[in-house]
Structures are given as structure tokens and as C-alpha cells.
Image (cartoon, rainbow, N blue to C red):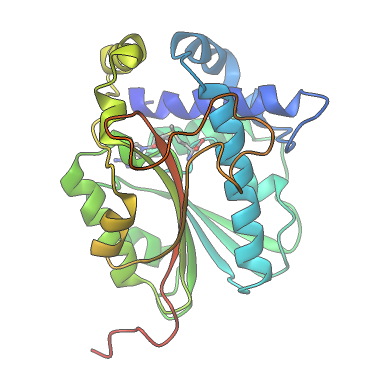
Length: 279
Ligand SMILES: C[S@@+](CC[C@H](N)C(=O)[O-])C[C@H]1O[C@@H](n2cnc3c(N)ncnc32)[C@H](O)[C@@H]1O
């Protein structure tokens, strides 16, 4: 497995810890299995201010936004970009007829299949795993797996964008907007540029780089990034703000106009019906 794919076991380990709390926000009964020993080793190695509470908040924010998108907007195609060790296909209560596509590097998908080999697919839903490089041409394999451009899609890009160079981030977000039909939704997270330069995060950032998976991208203005890539931004939240706290964030939330602070952003975007390119 590539070094960057190991980080999927790190985030799974954080989900296991949340699951094992009495006051858990969500239950991911598979998290400890897919995290394996390495996930907990990395959780210690990458320990930093707010990592574990942030991952609990990110999971909860996205769980709820995903559930809203499939129930209220009736989306039936769900694509997890860089799915990693995400087990939402198994653990969320999906409506009948949902098809989930999990995209990631081939070795990660093989390792995940092995770790979850004993878990049957729940009834009423389908899943396709698609081995891709998301910095290359990944849309062909997605279409071959059965994804349909003419139907709206729920895209989830969680825990990926900071690993990519800016050109790849912009290319990916714009590709999603160009591929998707009206009514499609994009959910995900991104960090601030200052988070890449914060001296207090130096040990964490150095450990990531030493392990071969440096953080490369951040932006102070996720709204502008997403808009420039073709998305209508519905919501951007920092952990600790209303709708992205869930009783987990232990720090004050700095206002957005305070410059040069490390930040994480959770976002919800869509492509409103009627804005389709007629060509
Ligand atoms: C921090 S993990 C996030 C996994 C999952 N979304 C989560 O939040 O737990 C980063 C994931 O990005 C995947 N990844 C990184 N670069 C990629 C690329 N170029 N193509 C496909 N997947 C990639 C890794 O394999 C890994 O599974």
C-alpha cells in the first residue's frame, strides 16, 4: 500500500475511538478492524491539536449531510473519492436503490477488501470499488463501473485535498462539476494555507512528510476555490461553529477575518437544477 493510503487507517483509528465512547456521535463497528495496528500507531505519531475531535466532527458532519442528500434530495449515486477505510456503505442506513462507488488506489482497495472479507454486503444497496489515481484520468473507470452522468450524484471528498498539489485539486473539483448533472452535491473538507506553515504543527507536518505523504494544499478561501471550480457553495463550517461542533470541539473558534491561522473547513456545495451546460 502507498504511504498516503496508510493515512486511511489513521482516520479509521480515530473513528474507532469515537465509536468506543459511551457518548459516541456515531458507531463505526468496522473501524477497529480496518484501522489495524498501524492505524493506532499513526494516530499516536500524528497526534496534534484537535486531530481526534476534528475527525469525530468531520465524520458526523458528513454522515448527516450524506443522509440528508439521499433522503431529502433523493440522490441514488454516491461516490466516495479517496474512500480509504470509510465503511459508510456498511454502516449508514441507506435508502433502497442506492449505488455506492468507492474510488481509491488499487492496493488500498485490495487491503480493505481483505480486512472486510467476512462482512456481507447489506441488502438493498450496491457497491462498486474503482481502482484509480485521482490525479490522472479516473472518469473512464468510474463510467465503466456503471456510474451514469445523466443522473445527479453525491460526491464526497473527505481527507484528500491537502495531499494533492493545487493544480490537481482544482482539476479534480472542476472535473466533478463538469461531469455531474444538475442536482448533484459535493461534500468534503479542506484546510487553510496557514495550516501548512504553522510552527506549532511542525512536528506533525514533518512526520507526514517523512512518511512520504506531505500536506501540500490549503486555502484561506474555500468559497472562492469551490466557486471557481464550478460549484454553488451552500455552507462552509469550521469545527466548533454551529452545525460543526457536536459537543466535541475543545478550542475557541477564531473569526474568519483573523489572518494566518491554521483552520479546517467542512463544506457543502451543489449544482442547482437548471444550471446545466446545454452543450
Ligand atoms: C486520509 S485518507 C482519507 C480516507 C477517507 N476518505 C477518510 O476520510 O477516512 C486519504 C486517502 O486518499 C487516498 N489517495 C491519496 N491520493 C490519491 C490519489 N492520487 N488517487 C486515489 N486515492 C488517493 C489514499 O489512498 C487514502 O485512502
